[in-house]
Image (cartoon, rainbow over all chains, first blue to last red; front, top):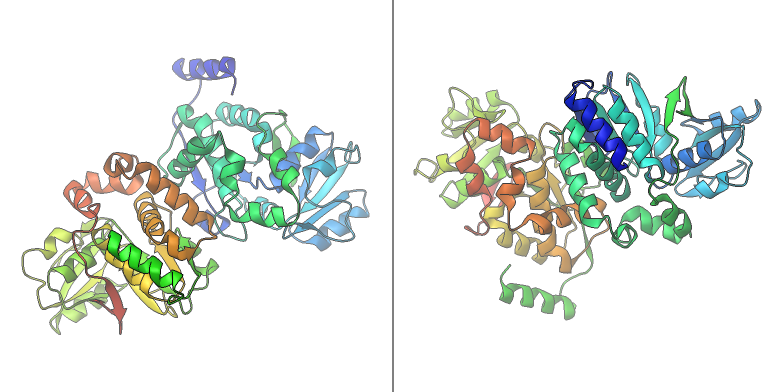
Length: 254
Length: 254
């Protein structure tokens, strides 16, 4: 977050213009979501490698919206009404679809002024689990400060919801939850051990994220599939400023 | 682990006397246990504050065995056949039982040569979730090196199973999983992001555990109930050497 915005936000709080404290919790896996109450809260879905980074990139490159769908068949059906279809399973593009799940596929102009139907192994399923939330947002390093400011400006409690890998906790989503929690720390109350852990892990590794990730399970998996370029891309901070928010089942740029 | 044991274990490996690599995974909450396969593995149940620390202490102070039970009523029934009964919920001793869940209650001679029926908010429930494991052990800082050596000497894969707090991930169990994983690191293959996180969190805080824990949810909860002494006790390393192993539903000293 830039200094001016931070100062403005602190001033809002001091002047009593912003309600405090709102709470922040981190959920490290979809299997843990039922342990928290998401009703009326702002839920940030986090699937850094690569769904939520790709969603942000698509909107930045002019896509009108991204519709997350759980089943590939559902995405395929939407092709008939003009959607670009994007489908990934276990790190690979499914045959017969326009795109897989790489952010670079959104950069050649084909998503501009189009809607995308996206289905992935982890991230899109999580978006469908957020019924009852006040707002559902898609998180990525690419737009982390804009996202943080959006959350600071909203009065709602915050849940940072990591997609993980097939219900297992993973490193890259935890790192992002930690990075975002650190940006929000002065504006929220954090009584959540997962958030404390995530913040510490990010703080200790922020200057060497890619090296640190080389021991992680999904980095190894994507490396075997030659997606190193995607991974380096997804860990860049603040290269775009759109905030993807779910409206009527479609993520659109705020 | 002392230097001689470590050297002996490395020699066993180099000489091919010990099968390698066995795997190690960390499960950060009971809600995540279904994501791993525990069949035929050594499962270490971890509820540092305080069930598994108390179990180790009871056996060290001469208890013949500790039977973990899920329901308080079940513990109460065992009183009739001579068991000492111990019951805790939400950090407090339940009325009508011989003990709560404090390790200090095991030090006045009353558990010597007795069996204990123990029910707690988190830890004992987890022990009952481990059907199919080759061995179920109870983990604590108090006996960490003996436990590590036991696991190194066994050929089975290892699951470090954190009890958490009511299915939420917690700090103290994660810290212990990290400490134990670091002791086992040279003897196992670790392809598990939760284990990498736990090791890093322990490594960064091992010289200031109590200070670090002051931000954690369960430390605050137990502090409100005046259990600081218990917490300081539970973070002492290697003050006893028994290894609690489940035999016919009862944890006994190996």
